Amino acid sequence: MLKLKNINKQLGNFRFTNVSTEIAEGEYYVLLGRSGSGKSQLLEMIAGLSVPDSGEIWIDNSNVTRKRIQDRNVGLVFQDYAIFPNMTVFGNISYSLHSRKYPRGDISNKVKEIAREFNIFHLLDRHTQNLSGGELQRVALARTLVTSPKILLLDEPMASVDASLKDDIKRTLRNINRKGLTIVHVTHDYREAISLASKIGVIHNGHLIQEGLPAEVFERPANRFVARYAGIKNFFRVSYS
Image 1 (cartoon, rainbow, N blue to C red):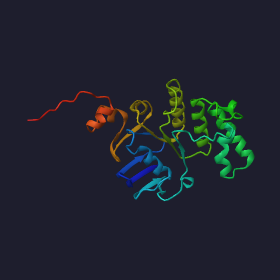
Image 2: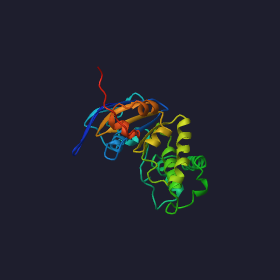
Image 3: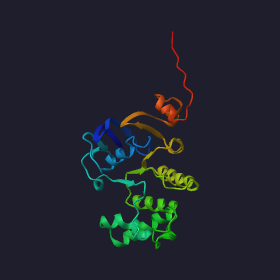
Image 4: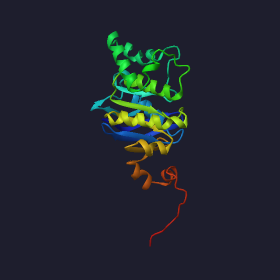
C-alpha cells in the first residue's frame, strides 16, 4: 500500500537518514516522536507537500515521489485543521469537490451523506467560528474523506482537542479504520499510539529507530530512548560472564 524507500532529506541542520517502512492496506500506523523529531515533515513528504532529496515513495505499486498531493489520492488533516473561517460547514466540506469539478447534485449528495456519518448534518449551514474543537475536528475529517482518499494522514489530530473530547475522536478514527481506510497518524503521545495503532514506528532525530506491534515496541524497546518513551524509569546495567 505505502512504501518509503531510503528517504533522505536535509532541512537546515536537520536530516532524515535512510527512512524506510512499509504500511499495509487497512493498517493504522502511528508515527511516534518528540517535537522536532521529523514526524510532521515526513508526513508532508508522504502527502507531496515536500520532496525527498533521495529515496522513493510508493502508493499502490506506483512511484509517487515527484507527484503533487492532488495526484496521490491521499487526504491530509493538519494539526490546526486549516478550516476556512469565511465558509459554512457545507462550504468547507464541499470545497475539494468543487475543485475537482464534481456535478453540483453529486456534491450536495456527497456532503450530506458524509455529514450524517460524522454527526454534523445539523451544522451544515453554520459558519465555523463558533464551533467546538470536536466539531471542527469532524468537519476537517469530513472535508478530507469526502473525496474517498486511499490513505488518511493525520498530523497530531488530538493536539487541539479538549481532553473530554479525545475519546470521542478516537472512536471516530477507529470506526474509519475498521471500514478499511489506511491511516498514518503522527503524535508525541504514546498513549494515543497504544490505544489506536495496529503498528507503531518511533522516530528520533530523523531516524526510524523501532517499528512493530504496540506490544513489541513498548514491552521490548530497542533502546533506552524508546524505553523512556514507554514510561520505564528504572535501568540496570548488567554484564554477562
